[in-house]
Length: 317
Image (cartoon, rainbow, N blue to C red; front, top):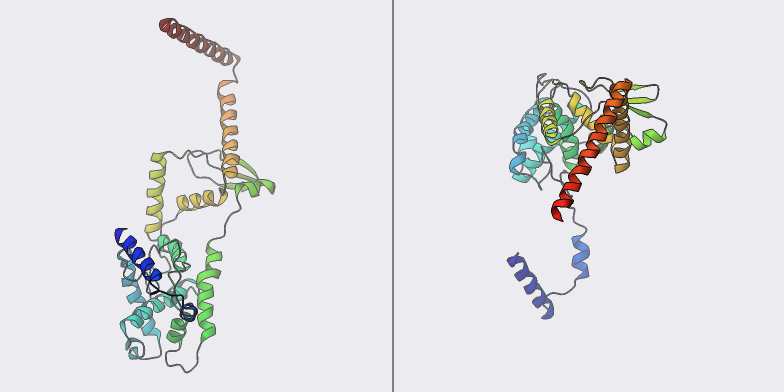
């Protein structure tokens, strides 16, 4: 912070002394340069382009990038020399571009030929943790590579610039696959306004989600700190383990879609409150003797509270 303040003071002195002046020509030229915009989020698993290249937490995916390059070269009609004789910066773009093309081939085109079934990134039974996080990483403003890289990889000798194919890859990878895999359920309020009713699933022991005849039945769930820890650990296990189903993750994703505002929360809580009221009536108020016992117990509690307050007041006086 101190160094930044000193730099600012020096800049002010330079402005006062006329050493720094506005140069509109240079400024206009600066904005014509291509750049990578920095957003508010950082990639979770994979870096694309130079901005996050070398970040320690993204290094495990570099191994899979090199694997993607080998698979890409194995399918290419050109010699590896065409791709690999380039400076370090271009080699980095080469790795990222091949990774993106292989990811596109194995997901959007569903062509996983050459990869084993349990390959965690490119295989047909890849771990869900990557399927969920790759879309997040690929749409970040600061985690991109130029389309020119994809065009060059698709046609390295420049005989026919396949810009249309490169744009197709970018479109399908960033948007069309994204919309297919992440179809958002309307919020609870929107569903309620459309006539959907909410009830609690009859089976508390299982995550039963039932939609029948305009009624959406959800399990009754109280999220305590311990419950939160349990759910996060189960979700991590589901997403990290290859060939693992993900019922808990899907349920939490459904809740995330249903709850957009505090109004959604209140709507769902009110329906759980109705369940509690119904259960209380069915359990405790069926038998008249039980009702009498409850009334007597309530009266005794009130008398005890009154006596306690009176005793405290007498002691203070």
